[in-house]
Image (cartoon, rainbow, N blue to C red):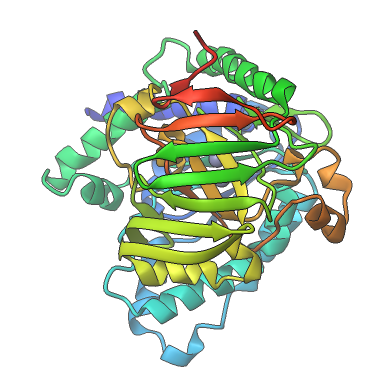
Amino acid sequence: MKENELEQILVKFADLIVKVGLNLQPEQRLFIWAEQLEVAPLVRQVVRRAYQAGSPLVSVLWNDDREKLLRMKHAPRDSFEEYPAWKTDTRYQCTKRGDAILYISGKDPDLYQGQDPELVSLTSRVYLEHLKPARELTAKNETQWCVICPPTPDWAAAVFPDLSREAGEERLWEAVIKTCRLNKPDPVKFWQDYFLQIQEHAEYLNDKAYSALKFKAPGTDLTVGLPEGHIWMGGGDVTRNGIAFGANIPTEEVFTLPHRERVEGTVAATKPLSYQGSLIEGFSLTFKEGRVVDIRADKGRDALQSILEGDPNSNYLGEVALVPHGTPISQLGISFLNTLYDENASNHLALGSAYRFSLAGGADMSAEEFAAAGGNESINHVDFMFGSGEMDVDGVMANGTTEPVMRAGEWAFDG
Ligand code: ZN
Ligand code: ZN
């Protein structure tokens, strides 16, 4: 891609982020958390666009991955309980006072390859513990928040190991342009219309109010109970005070929360999972009464184990999401090794926290009330992909009869 072509894409991307992702309001501040210095060109375009939209203050906090890797390689081994708390405190303060929050990361999925798994796991636990207060606010949609993953050279090299770094980055940009629909004449208008289509599927499922979903595919035979009052959402989000926004771009999913104690059976992942700089591949999980009782993994078992050890509730599910197999992300046939893209190519589940807004009245419940209603809360929320073109999904009605929801990975009720 020529430099001026890339610049035009970045301008479109920034416009989409500010108008649809964040729906930044006049006079609203913006806080940006960026994970690699390489994403600076996009960050600068967002800063420009946000000020043009009337924001009085845009702050950028750099939390560079390369810096984290240097620490992992060279810092004293007994120093990893230390954390620069001012970073997560700042994020919490900004979220609390109602700034829009943008998280930008083009993470290298293999960042921590070859590093001590115990230190990797400790580093992620210490980070998540510090992040918890800020995350609790976004899990209630207290303010608009958005996650964006632009290509970076290291990430592209991991996705396309057989190409030169330059060619790999170009290919990844092409894929991101397609999936974020930056190739449409008006991406903002595209997403506003597309959100409405996704919302129709969520409404259909809400009218059905199934008591459970049954998933069948090679390696998977899983029943996921749905609590009373569960809400299917998708096609954008709404803050507690009624501002529409899009937490993920791209997004194709409709999702809700499982009943934390009513998940039974085995699920086989259909895509590798990149977790905190480690890759987990060829894995499956077995659940009994909602809890993970057995795990298998061809690669990255330590990392999978470390997710489950995050806290006791990391062994329970917090999200179930449906994504038709025919979406553009899925049809590209690329494993992005990045959850934002891979989860929108596939039915997925998340270990750990449920979103409070997935349950009627959930945002106003105490922790005990939320748990009693079937909601799970944890320092983790780790999505993993298990959908495919071979997956059938049935909905279980209140009277116990079932009806098709998906056949061979596609909606069964779309005709
Ligand atoms: Zn999801
Ligand atoms: Zn999720």
